[in-house]
Image 1 (spheres, one colour):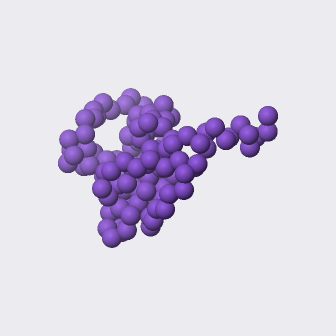
Image 2 (cartoon, rainbow, N blue to C red; image 1 turned 90 degrees about the vertical axis):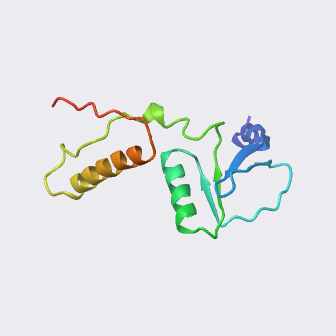
Amino acid sequence: MSMAASLRPAARRATQCLRLDTRRRRTFASTVRRDADFTHIVIGAGVVGLATARHLTATHPSSTTLLVERHAHPGTETSSRNSEVVHAGLYYGRGTLKTALCTRGRRLLYTFCAAHAVAHRRTGKWL
């Protein structure tokens, strides 16, 4: 079986799409032509895709952002690839950009979690 033939069944399946600005679900299928007009389309609802779609929606309020995900729920593959550790920047040289970004990111993450009631634990880590 050729590669193209093996991809056809997947291409025919309908894909659930979530428009971030209205929270309405739309179904598109490759066998039916649908006219759709979106300013931005983000492929993949993993960590980067969700962050990108959120940023586009927040910074361009008059535009429409379409987020396309192959799984039933966003972030499905994220947790299995995540160490679940908030890094403090200890392993990088003092004064480096990586250390600065790591420590700033840690502060922003804890602030976000507190502001939005996201459950988390500051367990610490022995070095």
